[in-house]
Image 1 (cartoon, rainbow, N blue to C red):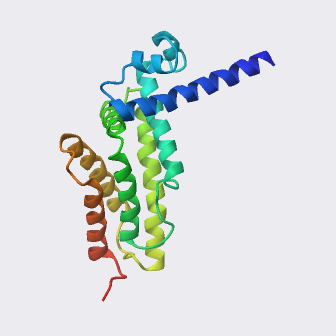
Image 2: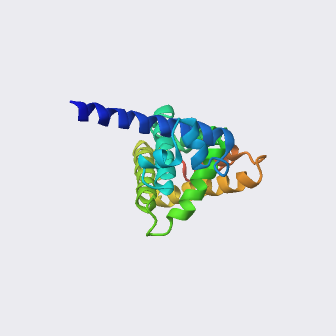
Amino acid sequence: MARKGTYAKGVAKREEILDTALDVIARTGYSSATVKELATAVGLTQMGLLYYFGTKEALFAEIVRRRDERDSAEFDHGGLPAAGGPQDLGAELAKLVKHNADVPGLVQLYNSLTAEAATPRHESHEYFTQRYQQVAVRMSVVLEQMQKDGSLRADIDPRMIIAMSSALIDGLQTQWLFDPTLDMARHVEFFWETIDLAYGTRRDQ
């Protein structure tokens, strides 16, 4: 029983660390959020903090995972509508991007880690690979439903649109870090409005 209680406390502390780290990074920025600062925020030493994750890289990868979990809960599993047209999908994705603009530190963290994790040997490589795949699956379901209900042309390959949309959002976030005046949400909406005009089948007359 004692071991079970100790394990539960360890899990709870790990969750506390991740939630606190999200708040600290969102507020102060990724580059300013050192392991020492995060450890202090939860009443631990640096060694004590890393005990729960192993390495600094693993810690920050888990912080991104927790951010994704929060976003999925807040935006209904990615904010993707069950039906509608391209503009509806664009509007929901724009909401998520607009939210990201309110937490620049987490955008910095995400961009930095995805670049580093592109190396196959990086310990977060598998996570980000699966993340892109999961996003593609969710969007595929929505786009295929649009094709079934007639709001998107059936001869369009959803994979092409998904790759372009993901590249757009990632690229916009990089540009936005250099130029915070960039309206990422509006650019996302414009992209999906363009898809609707080019490939949609339910247009206003």
